[in-house]
Length: 167
Image 1 (cartoon, rainbow, N blue to C red):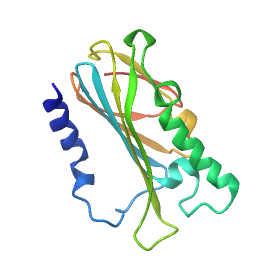
Image 2: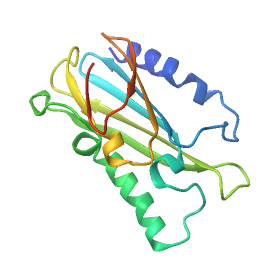
Image 3: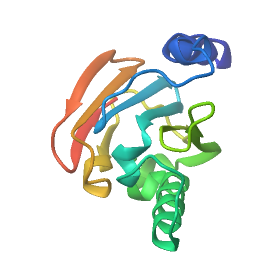
Image 4: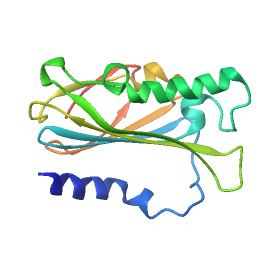
């Protein structure tokens, strides 16, 4: 069971695993979100310029900027209630929550966010409808590209503040 999830996740993440230490070129406002689903487990990965979530990429200078980052991190930690909502009847819980604010080597003005989380549910996730609230929560997102790998392989441009998708 976990073998297939690991293989699928590796394929989704391979561009990031083999990337150089410096950050790749990116477009502000563009967010990549990937969900790999196998049976009752979903692995969710996020990759975006920090500006898309925080409104800036530099090292936080003020208390309000530090709060913006901590609030974004808290939202990711509370992903099932704030960002990607699975039906309560699925009995889903998160594990291995990671949220990293990464600066380009030697830079304090160019950064990205890489985040991941595993969602483990009591029931099979095939054909489950989830609500994606990323654009509602983060107003700086201009383009949100979602790739789902599982029973339904699909690429979706999330255009609404909240949008229902079927896994």
